[in-house]
Every structure is written in C-alpha cells, then in structure tokens.
Length: 440
Ligand SMILES: *[C@@H]1O[C@H](CO)[C@@H](O)[C@H](O)[C@H]1NC(C)=O
Ligand SMILES: *[C@@H]1O[C@H](CO)[C@@H](O)[C@H](O)[C@H]1NC(C)=O
Ligand SMILES: *[C@@H]1O[C@H](CO)[C@@H](O)[C@H](O)[C@H]1NC(C)=O
Image 1 (cartoon, rainbow, N blue to C red):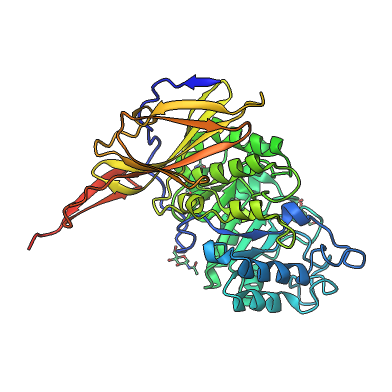
Image 2 (cartoon, rainbow, N blue to C red; image 1 turned 45 degrees about the vertical axis):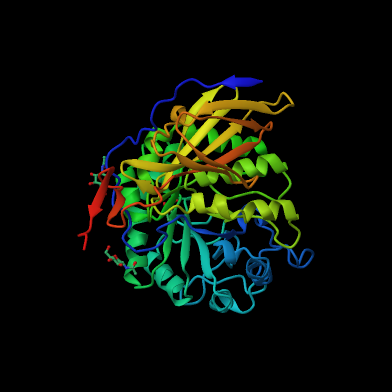
C-alpha cells in the first residue's frame, strides 16, 4: 500500500503553561533503569526457583548485568524492586522489613551493593493497608516508612494504590511526599495516584499531581503482549491533549515498563515500543531477564539514537499527528533549536496486519518541519543518513507490519552561524527566546 499523506499542519503545542513540578531536582529527563515486576512478578518460591524468585540474588544479578552488558553506559541507572519484597509483618518497632529468607542481608545491604556499582536503588510500597500482593502498606506509618527508606539510602520510591480509597489519594500522596522530602534525602517519587482515580471515576487533579510526583501512571499495567502495548499507544494518542501538558523536566507521564526481550513482542513490535516510548518522553524501565535476552533485543534497548530522543533536554512529550488506515505518524519536538524552530523525532507506525510493508510518503513540511534552512535527517534504527533535506522534500519510508521507522530531523545549522546568538525554549511560556551576546 502506498499511502499519500495529507497536509498535517504545524505540530501545535497546546495547553496551559506547564506547571513547575516537584521541586526535588531529580529526573530532569525521564528515569531509565530496570524494574522487576512485569517479568518476575510475585515469584517468592526461592526453594524451587532460586534463580527467578524475588530476592537479593535476583537484584544483584540484574544490577551486575546492567553494568557489565553495557546498559549503564547508555543511561540505565535505577535498579528497582517492585512488590513482594516485604515480610508479611512489620518488625517489632513497627518498621518495614524484607522477607529475610529472600533478602538475608536486608535492604540497606542491597542498596549499598547497587550503589557500589555506580547505580541507584529503587523500592516499592503502596498507599493502602496492603500492597497489591497483600504485604504491609504504608497507611498509618507514612513518616516512619519514609524515614526507613531514607535510612536504606533509597533513591526512588514507587507508591502503588491498592487497598486504599482513591478519594483519599489527593491528601495521601502529597502527605507521603512531604515525609519523603522531610527526610532530606532526594528520592524520585513515582505515583499511581491518577490511574486509581480514573478507574474509580474521579477526575485526577493534575496540577496537584505534578506538584507532588516525579512520575505517575495514567493507564493499565503493561502485560507481555503486543495487544497490551497497542492499548497503551492508543491511550496516549487518544488522550494526548489532556496528557501532554503535564509532562516536562522533573514530572513525567509513565506508560509503564519496556517489555522488550520477553516472550510477547516480535522484533518489529519491540522497535515500535522503544520508538513510541521515546516519542512520548516515557521513563525507560526495562523489565526483562538480562541473563537470557537475545542480542537483537538488547540492541534495541541500547539504541543510543532512540535513547537520545527519549532523553531530550527540552522534555516535551510528543504526539500522534496522523492516524488513518492503520498508518500513524508520531512526532516530538527536540533540540537543537534555531530561531523559532524545533528539531523533531518522527515515528511512522504501521498498525496494519496485511503482511507486507507499507510505503508512506510525505514532505517534511507536511510533518510540520518548516525551517527554511532544512533538516539533517537520519533513520535511527537503520542508521542511515539522508543528508540535509529541505521542507519541500518528499520522503518515503517503508514500514513493516506492526513495525516502525523512526527518524531524527535536526535543524540544519548554518555553517557560519553567529556565535553570539543562542536560542532557548521556555517550556513554561511555550516560547522561543533568542539571546544576543555583545559582539566584541
Ligand atoms: C485500613 O485499616 C484500618 C484499620 O483496620 C481501617 O479502619 C481502614 O478503613 C482501612 N482503610 C482502607 C482504605 O481499607
Ligand atoms: C524539599 O522541598 C523543597 C521545597 O520544594 C526543595 O527545595 C528541596 O530540594 C526538597 N528536598 C528534597 C530532599 O527533596
Ligand atoms: C487541585 O490542586 C490544587 C493545588 O494542589 C488546588 O489549589 C486546587 O484547588 C485543586 N483543584 C481541585 C478541583 O480540587
């Protein structure tokens, strides 16, 4: 199928000025790391399955591999524990404690181990009486639990929302954030606050969520299937006008883990997840067995060009700009900037299943790329450079079924550009500012 694309118009930056966000100085670009849940779930059977159970051994092994297999070198840094690390009972002094049969050296020792590797340590709890898997929640012990995490040198806290009343979350999540802050230790705060409220029919107060959380979940838990990834992509596209303005440096929408390298996604689908997650400025939290991941999936997770899109310093979440007959185009404004123009990452997605690649042909102008000086365009998965293209140039890409082509189009900076001008983008006012320095 050859799809001729109609004019799309400029990629609009809509919505109110972005809120300032949680002022703890962390995650100015989306967090990257490894998270146990999707792949390892609540396997507590260390007797029969010592290699895969939720245990100190599993996290140490994954932390080792994040470093030795090159993931740390491309930006993955958090090693995050999820549910099922706890003992069923609090300790004698009311403190949270791990299941010592699975974490014999305790959480501080695991945290120290992760830190010695140059990585950061994340933990999981729940704003309820229990965690989702039935372990002790933080209700009634918020301050003590925040202090306990700080004493373990935790860097990242994911707070789930099972066994709590969604209407209480408007008070509860900020309250726990207050206690985290009060410890004096900087900890990334990942909230499940909006998704539980949406499920309960409550409209989340995003100005408050942005102010109190570094990232938050909007939608379903990801599962190991293409259908699940598609449902997340659709949710982010269908709700983008409401979702996008909430994202920015220090405060991110979280579409959940990368499931690349597991059982459910093909090679093409894995590239699609990576590309779309980068376009929507998502946290890149791998949930995969790094001992057995195949090289082609590892290469997707370590694609530096796609990671650079995800980690673009402007922190503007991208959007779906075209959707017709199974073809979608997603676009994200990125650096470098020149005058009033952004550079862009553009992902062409083929949702069709009719077995043959689809050709998509479009001019840069139709994609909203109008800088008269042109763009240096490269394909990030194929590592092909198209040279400098003018806005009138028609590009044609071949997109495999359930696959993606992701391009980076960098503003072509004039060779002898004045060194005395610098363009910056103000995310709060949505305007460009060109600063001129005196010319000596
Ligand atoms: C949590 O437990 C307390 C004490 O049993 C109870 O009063 C409260 O209603 C429970 N909260 C929720 C959200 O279930
Ligand atoms: C606590 O909050 C204040 C005010 O928002 C902020 O300046 C400070 O950096 C925070 N401290 C930590 C440890 O997060
Ligand atoms: C939402 O939260 C903000 C600040 O946290 C507060 O000022 C505002 O009143 C809240 N809005 C609603 C509708 O509750």
